[in-house]
Amino acid sequence: MSKTEGGARQGRARALASRLGGKPLVLVGMMGAGKTTVGRRIASRLGRQFIDSDEEIERAAQMTIPEIFEQRGEPEFRAGEMRVISRLLKEKDILLATGGGAFINAETRALIKAEAVSVWLKADLDVLFERVSRRSNRPLLKTADPKGTLEKLIEERYPIYAEADITVVSRDVPQDHVAADVIAAVLHYLKTT
Image 1: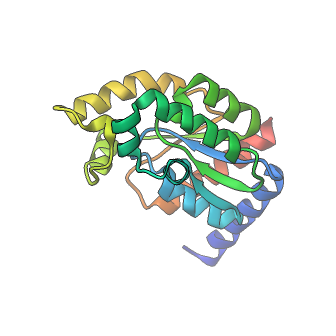
Image 2: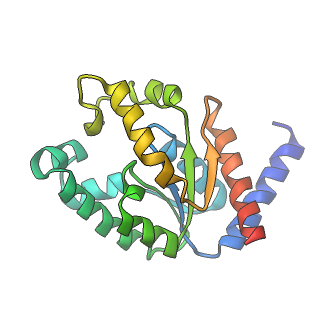
């Protein structure tokens, strides 16, 4: 990256931080879309605290997400997820990466829409599957056909994710590029709303 590009990138980040005020920025989307990786980069550029809602849920429950799913079931996990996200949205100057199912819950989605600017990191099936296949901690993909399950989740969830304020495509490029795309898209959104 040239000095000019770096300066322009820093300028956009400063402008975005100013326009957001203290309002939370929330990343939504499927598992493997890059919410945590991209989110950390954006938070760093904006001088915000990065929070991963899944990590906060594990801390609050004192167990891992797979353990919560196994011992308490998905409905109890979703209820806890909503409580944690509700608490986190009261914080100022945060960038919150949510779990893949968080925005699907109508109450959680309403909270995010009321309290934050939401960004859907949208990725296609092949990109997502390649990324999630590297890890074994995805309770919803512990099926006989994980790719088919992922495809079904995409069909169910993408129309709901589309309700986010902004959509940015997460593709197979260095995550710094996607972070820059998010910053530019949010800045554009805030200038036009």
